[in-house]
Amino acid sequence: MVAPKNFLARALLIAGVSAVLLTSIVGKVFTQSPNADLWVGSWSCSPVPPLTQAPPLPPEMKPPEGDSLFTIPPPVANATVRMIVRGTAGGDKVRIRVSNFYGKTPLQVGAAHIALREAGSGIKSGTDRALTFGGQPSIAVAPGAIALSDPVALSIPPNADIAVSLFFPEATPEKRTVHFNAVEEQYTVPGDATGQARLESARSAKWAYFLVGLDVSGAANRGTIVAIGDSITDGGGLRWPALLAARLLTQKKHYGVLNQGIAGNRILGQGADDFSAIFGVNALARLERDVFGQPNVKYLILYEGINDIGLPGAFGDPSPPVTPAQVIAGMRQVITRAREHGLVIYGATLAPFEGTVLPGYYTPEKEVTRQAVNQWIRGAREFDGYFDFDKALQDPAHPARLKAEYDSGDHLHPNDAGEKAMSEAIDLSRFK
Image (cartoon, rainbow, N blue to C red):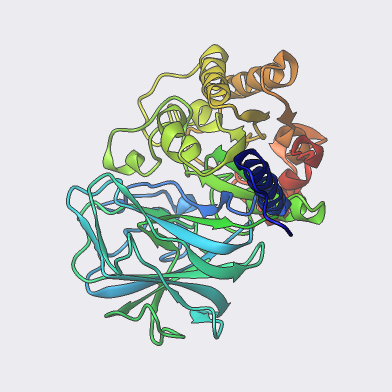
């Protein structure tokens, strides 16, 4: 090419070359998936404080030894805790969230690792990754704060078991931040064993210690769905939120589904004593932390209210009975707050609980309140839609009771088959 002899010609040539280069660069940018760096929540649990002393329970409520929300999680010092969590969304990068929400002193995390689980406490060869916090292998998490780890490359399939190992070099805060039954399993051994392939002679339990979230990024992911609820929601891979994630995947809808259930939780009320504190702060009070603080939330499913109705008068709870109007007012507040943050919000009807073995939890008057709340959910159309868990779980011959094949035995909580029925009652077309 002959170089132009005058300034104007040279300028036009440079502009033309620049335009070609810019078009090429822009073309490459827009051929990349817009979701390649989108973070979504794959697993989470809501922080709660542990009991400091076990409450006296009636015989009908006593579970197997060590298998209960009402056990006291032991303190941890100079020990590694490996927690197995069931991720919902997959991705090619991962990060974790560590919370000192209830602590009054800093939480020292000496080391952290993440890997795919093989079996038991064992991890899959080649998947172990050391995690850092701001480029450092350790961190002191301030009281009330959350620490977000640096992202690390790790290919994680959807609905996979993931091992997160945290080393606590010194005594953890006396007021520990924990959650029972949100992990598939948990293993504790002395010393720093975060990078070990298997933890031998480990003490096992069902507590999450200070771990409250695991996020992933990947081109297929669309966003995060949050399920906020009580004990009927709370739990791990066999609960309806995890089963919903698996169902969505069959339609190639890649969403992270976060289980923000807390046993005993209410929309409005909360207990003040040591026993009822483990039921967490009320749903309205935890929206910022448990819903709006999660990454790229698109949808919120609210399934709460039965404890607002049932707990007053049960277990010596002195709270006055709630009215349908009070429960509905609480739901309306959740709706308003969700829309303020641009979320689509779905409600769910409250499942039957007549005949529950929990003393004082059910009365005919409380059933009237439940029916009135469900009638409002179905008829008022104030949610963006609703899922009829009541209809999915009820005994057709006795609609105020759970269907026998879905009853865990206490006539309040669904069993695994009931959780599956709840998941199948969710219309997947509601998630775009």
